Image (cartoon, rainbow, N blue to C red):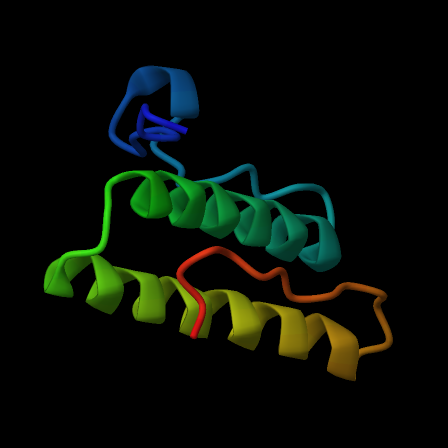
Length: 85
């Protein structure tokens, strides 16, 4: 992915980072998808110290959201990316 996945300030996103969905599960799944899009975009930009720091923060976010859904019985798995160590 060479283009940013979106801008929550843009009107076409209704000032949201991701679609909140009709249920908490849907909203969290949408947020996980957006984090994954950001990870893909970050991976495509290279491996500077800043990028690796961003990657770590995004991975922490994805892992926390996946863990939250799994603790409540939902079937969701974390995903590996090329920059994972």
